[in-house]
Image (cartoon, rainbow, N blue to C red):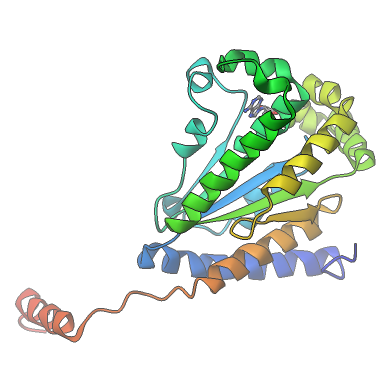
Length: 267
Ligand code: AMP
Ligand code: MG
């Protein structure tokens, strides 16, 4: 893929400009209070989800957004339906929510490791049926349509990493002492299932890319480029909402002037 920048310096300047645009758009989202924005990040280990989130969203007012990383579900979470824990973390109107992994793990990692379903104690043992995963995808599509109709725009980013680049990043996490803390033995174990993940993702993306919530496939081997594409996509989506600061009526302007007079009689 052709990068959207000429040099590292150029990329950083472009991203800084995008971060400024986002900083200006967020208060309008908040003030107009009609829409919520949900950003979903999926991708293999080391695909750059955390870096993309921290760089692209670095200009946002923390009071208007919340980011959440979904890990292996707890016992309480497993005792609910598979959309429950993410539903609890949805952004309210006016806010930006970020999901670092999401309910999509339920049709990817769980599909690669179906034994994980045992903890969910689903009625029957239909997980082996070809319909099981299709039904899950349909639940997701229904859910995202529901969100859209109720004012939440869902933007889904799949960070598409090559196996070769993942090796490079894992090796860097071993070689660079400052990155050792990031290295997880489990990542190497999951890497051996690369083909299964690729197949699960292919099915998942194919079945859940809808008109109201399409997937954005982001080439992720080049981190700078990935961040620029994500930033542009978020900006374009916010602009498409035609957000404006709320206008008050003439009568209300009159009321405000009255209040002002009482507030500061001498000025
Ligand atoms: P990380 O994002 O590297 O901090 O790792 C989080 C881990 O939690 C990943 O290995 C995910 O696959 C795993 N995980 C997230 N959601 C689920 C889920 N619903 N079921 C099973 N594992 C999950
Ligand atoms: Mg990890």
